[in-house]
Length: 186
Image (cartoon, rainbow, N blue to C red; front, side):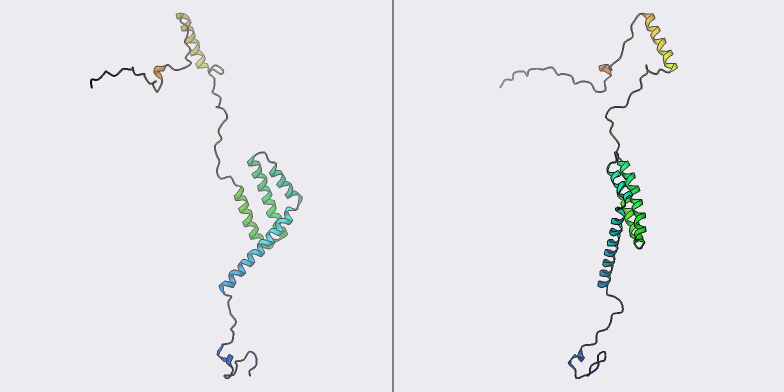
């Protein structure tokens, strides 16, 4: 028979099967599996570096400070500091995954960003400036003239606390007189 790696003699039944050829390029199926394996390796490296960095005292203290923050904006500010410091420390621990760290850092910062601000509803109406409390020089002169003219005429000034009913924008419904229907002859 022939030696391994050579073509078999024609009398051999395996002669009809061609020898296996080595593929020059990896098949797309294997390439996808390789990419997935690389992604899993990067993920493992990332979380290993994150755990190591989180064990440091200053990062742990930032997390506890963010939990105790009194306002949402205060918490966001502390978390921004935490994520910046975390990314810096992780790059020192494992510089081979710096692209992955930058991507995750940007994602974390986007997550805590405030994109929609709701207007606050006040618990009470804002104070109305009182004319008597801080009169302007022009108003005080006019007020004195009106007071003196009213005193001279002897008629007291009327205080207008509520607008008159005639001046109201929507008139009150008027009552219809109740009429009895006239008896009908059936």
